[in-house]
Amino acid sequence: MPTISDEELSAYLDGELNNQAKKRVEAAIQDSPTLQRKIAKLKQADQMARIFFEQSDQHAISESLKNTIRNHQAHTTSSRKRNNTQKVAKNAAKKVVQGPWRNMGYWAIAASVLLAVAVLWPQTQTGNPLQQRIQHGLATLAQNSVQNLNSETRLEILWSSENAQGHFCRRYALHTVNGSSQHQACLVQDNWKIEDLHEVQTDYQLASDVFTPPETVLTAEEEQAWLQKLNR
Amino acid sequence: MNQQHQQFQQALLDVLPALRRYCLSLTGQLHSAEDLLQATVERALDRWQQYQPDTYFNAWLYRLCRNLWIDTMRKEKPTDSLDDEQESLGLNESTTDTCVTGQQHEAQLTLARVQHHMAKLSEGLRTALYLVAVEGRSYQEVATIMDVPVGTIMSRVSRARQQLSESL
Image (cartoon, rainbow over all chains, first blue to last red; front, side, top):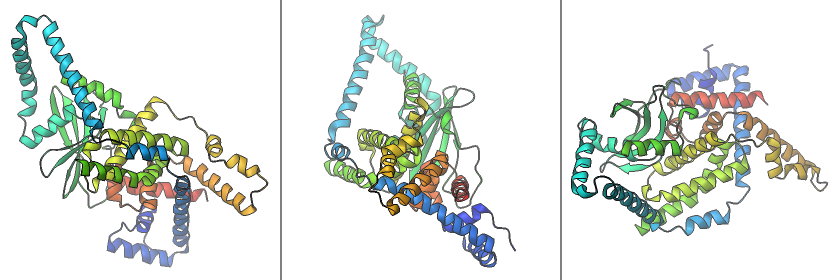
């Protein structure tokens, strides 16, 4: 009798096995009362999960939460963003005119631009326009932000972390009509080192070290601090 | 712009029950799930302009929710006990209520037992089990939502079922 693993049995319940594996599991279940009992227990476990989650449906969603959504204004975010942008711009301008460069405002701006170009040059020169947009997104977007890179590709920042070497790393997904792929980029000496993680997969693979456990993920505030440092 | 905003509002309203269940899968407790739901909605509203009317909406929202939960976990470890949860559900009072029928009492005890065993699952196992066994999503979809390989989902769902079935 073929050996059927617990994972295979569970995947069989979810309809996640290919035809060949499915037939093998079905034949084994038919011949084995032990496997039949196991399957029944797994189904009971699912039933437990359903009971657990259905409890939340017994309470109505609060009207105040629904009203928060219904009364939300389309311009709320944009105006807040605009205000924030204006504030940042104003502060930046203040720094220039109030600092030692106040009599040389234009020169200061020009110098800043040159400096920015010098810093960003190695990053922006490392690829095509799409890669440049990705790198710009990596340096500016907060977690869960989504940005259209072009008509076909969308960038989503999933989370940020700090690796063992203390480098700022960002997990991101690229979405296209054909599916999604995930990548990790770590900022090493002002350059984003990009690693492809997993494409939309057709075969199963075991849990690997690509998964970043929650404790290594930066909080929104920690991430913000990194982004501010990057864009200072 | 207005039409897209309305679509976003409707999509968010529609997804609320599922989103609350997802919050429950992360927190393991109802009242903290409500708090997480509230925070997720606020953050989603704040970022509504990133809304794209396609299949990625739920996945985006779930990830946003999970990141918020990670933030919360990092800041303060939840200290609510199962007793608190039962209290919030009115279980402790109702089990002593003389008007409760035997059948209701049995149902409440079952729910309490289920809550106990579900709370013992780690967040990763509980979430994977919820998305697969309750929402009926494919391993691939769940892998995308949880940012892990498909094989990890396969193993988490199996372990979650295993742990629960051992408690039966």
